[in-house]
Amino acid sequence: MGKTSLVKALAKKEKLPLVEMNVADLLITFPNPTDIKLILNRLHTVVKDIGPCIILLEDFEPTDLFTMDDIESIRRIIYQFIKEFNVIYKNDPRLLVAVISYPIKEEGLLNFFDYQIVIDELDENVRYNLLKKYLEKTKLDSTIDLENLLHNYSSDEVTGGFSGEDLKKLVQGAAYQAIYENRKEIIEKDLEESYQQLVNINHGGLQTSTTKICKKNDNEENVEPPQKLEALEIEVTRLKWMISATSQMIHNALRLAFSDNREFVIRFFERFEKDRRPYALHEIAHITGMDEDVVKKVLAKKYFTMLFPKLSKKGRVVAFDRELLEKVADEFTFVNNKS
Image (cartoon, rainbow, N blue to C red; front, side):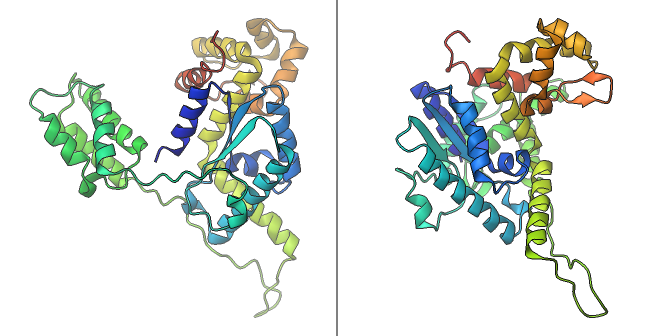
């Protein structure tokens, strides 16, 4: 409903760097997500030299991937993280903004924050204005009555519950359909087909189920020790997130890498995009103008490892595209006036 966009707009308005984390980071990046102090120490190494900034803690969507036990476990991690953060960064010029999609029941959690902003589902008037904004950037067939089109696709019966991103995808899908059919203008059929595709998307995610571990004898279940079950639970949850949040992790990794060594990222990417082949260490050193030892240290960092994975013994490749690189570059323009 625009929660993250609101935080990004705040950061841009106040000209503050934005450091983004989410529960996927906590579950995937760290050996044990419950080791909150380790997570905070890693976070501190990133933000200590940045100075005043906004730290965005994203929520754990899509919740359909998890059982209620998963969700409660993740909520405990979030609660502990925010509690520890509040102690470490008390009276510190860094602002923590937590973005979540469920009602907060724990009063203790709310007490850590100065403000709570509730964003309801988009009403018909907001959907109308958003659709108008997106459609004005396209070329519509001259026979289309724009007002009727807007009232129809912004109505509760048609797009009730749609987010701003859904509405953008509705228009983008129609534009892609027109391009596919070699047309320069969007017709009503394009919007109808794009709408149906959005409605028919299966958001169910992975189906979770409870499974018996094993049996000791014919009827006697062998119950594993609690610590083993807890470790198994963490691994299963981690695996679910690895499947669902890879693109977000790449996005976050690129932000960190961009902050760390923008020149390295851009030079390596530009060359890779041109040749589309794996690069050996000495080639990367030549491309980036660095010593091989320095390149080794750069590529050893967690986020660089994700962005430039090793393809067997042939060398490194790139795990993101130009669209994402340009998006991250845009995000950094308000941080550095020279960008």
